[in-house]
Length: 368
Image (cartoon, rainbow, N blue to C red; front, side, top):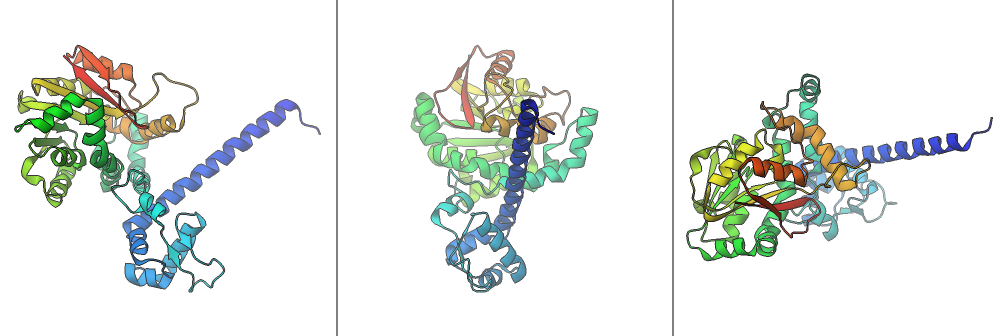
């Protein structure tokens, strides 16, 4: 029996999709194996020790040698770490983490650090029954239910950018007047809404030593971790962390900068929060929003960033945003027009998209 051109085309499409999903499945499994290595401290241990056998890794890490050997072989096979002589016997092979691999898997301040990705997958598994129920009922899944893995993965994903770029590049280049105001005023004040584990708040306090900073988040474990992080970085004397609703009007009209960094799309009541942020400004104060850089409109085929954002939305951001009702049900894919609509409803006269280039984030200045 011969196949027609149409049949051949369909078969090619089936093969391509199956191959793509198989590759994606491998990537997901490898991300979880990276999570194992990160949680057990294996990458850092090997990087600091230098080339090591499975027995040496096991002894130093306090794990069983057979597990160490299997993990090391898997990591080398995936080209995530190096092995000096693959032909050596299993007990003689030595494994190493290169500087390039360390930038991705060890250095928590590196802009290339992606080791936390597996934590997202663990967090989704934590709530899968609740997530399926939410899809059926129209309810949501509370942020806290995703667990520690979500908090830590999200914070670790954003930390390098906050520490390296937030003040010196993003504000300095995208909103230089704001940067200058914070650097020059002896009594500058910053409100960081949805601060999570506090890395953005700490970055503000570090970059602007004359400023006082208030970090606000509704998740109590996040605020507890933020306080520890601030103390470890020696800026806890200038930061106040509060467990509070972002729409709380109690902050008063006293902040030079009020910001919400990669959190607006997660909120059930984004307009109420923006109203509170608008009211918290001092005279001449500025409201800055950083959120996802997605396309201006829906397209049938998205680029990798759009695909990533939608996947995050269906698994986390939309369900978390719908946990509290009534909800705007924004989801991760919050386009520019949506930000403008929320800002207008909150009383702002205009929204400026700041000239800051980033693969994942877009920056807005809310005016009026």
